[in-house]
Length: 586
Image (cartoon, rainbow, N blue to C red; front, side):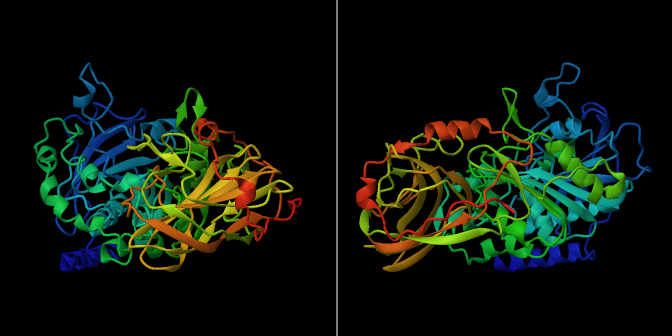
């Protein structure tokens, strides 16, 4: 297996260098070419071949009325979700049988008027999905070849100007991270929503398995054999879409390795591999997104990029920038499509700034827990000062029962299958804050523990504790501990405003059942002490850009708090440095 992986990686490098790039295929429309397409476009399909011989299905959507001799910039989607069947009903044909491209991003194509703006859209199904042959390998060497091949096709097709921008959310945002790591010729911009670019941290926190990743390989192969109907009754599409799930699963057994240094994970760390990428990139990431958690490298990738970049970061779950419910935006900030198209127009269409309908879009649009939005130039902010608090000693039971919030589902669907407890562990509280304070950045903790057995769960949960003793979850981090001594634990990034009179609460426990799938040791663990390092902002932030709260943040703030049973005064650490009053921002 290792030899095969190394062979594929060599092929990836060859594609990027233009050595082994598949030639642009002859483009032929299917018999159903005009049956179902986004408004303002015509559609046809073709196939491209990867250097290792896989047959990838391609949807091409051109501005209506243009033949392929007219060149346009290209928006590219490389995805496993393009074989799920179009939801468009054509001539009374049921949606599951309507020929045409899958409508995963029709809202974007139509809402942003990409065809009227003069873009072509290319959608490429990753190997093992839709009408593409082969085995999905969860962003491994094979799919990396697919991404490189797709960009090369979008760059060299007769209808292309040679300039390509990638667009996606979740899995097909991570294919954008793959492209950033590979840096293929012609890639001019990436828009990546709800991204988790380090696949290890998308599955584990220091060997503690994230709950949503438990069935990744199995769930991924639910995409194989869906078939779709991009080409009704097309024998090539049907042959490629036959499921090879059982065979393909064998190649993904290493997905259950919890060793971050394993080769399987190293080749899927696109934060590390995209270091110093100059490809302009627009990222969104949410603090309440358990599907692609904010600790999986989105901020690390953003901060490593050397080209133009933009970030939307705030208190939402696994949603797109334009998603709405009941007339309300699920992120809370209007104008996502407009901002994306300004980004694409400049970097892909090559519209000079002075000739574009440009606005002063912030580099970073950040939302705090009170729902307000502000602009930042970097995140974590430059004025964040790390202050330490000493952790008190105590014990906790590694029994897997602790849950971080009052609600039964912090993450999508609420995955709690037992009767949970809250506040189950050993608490440390800060003294009450004498004034309002703003926590912003990446908290860390060092916990001195004495486990009874190896692979003991240690989870650090951070809370805002109100004067009435109710605790609201802020962020978390976890690790497995094998031996006695200090253990460093990195918590997920956060942006949280504390009111005067509130305390910081730190709970060291054996579980957070909303985020992780724990294997409890059923032992009593001793906490000998330790410390927590919290990044406090120096300057007061005021809202200087448009944006509002959102429904998920509001429901979280309403349902998450729970009463602390421990007595905060008795568990208060006097050696807990708190920030000075916020200063006016210069």
